[in-house]
Image 1 (tube, rainbow, N blue to C red):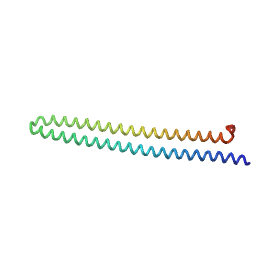
Image 2 (tube, rainbow, N blue to C red):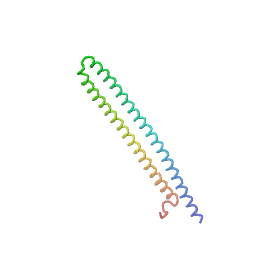
Image 3 (tube, rainbow, N blue to C red):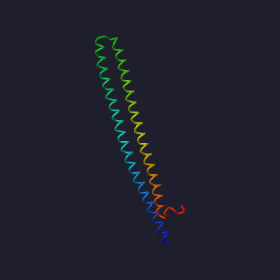
Image 4 (spheres, one colour):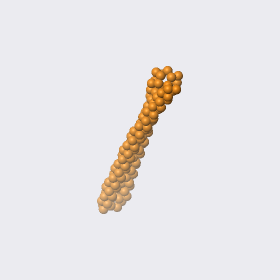
Length: 143
């Protein structure tokens, strides 16, 4: 019975070590995922802020141009407003595209980190299992 208790102890220790390594890898991956999400969120917020400031600036410039054109000629006012509206629409569309691309990159980064963490956990478990088998009887356990 002594050898069976020894084998149980070896396999129990190997399984426990593998579980600890997997838990540590998952904790590390979770921290990385959280950091990537934070950075991606910050990038998205920055893109939104920049887009908003750009729209405000364009709107201010367009308003000033419209006021001066109205002083010079009433008919030119409609043309200036149409041009300003097109610029605002273009800037808004461009800012929206930047924000969407930032979000896509962030999501891709999070998915990549999750895949790496999962793969690492599986490989650690495989190595731990092989190590436990090899240490028990030189690989001739009759697995």
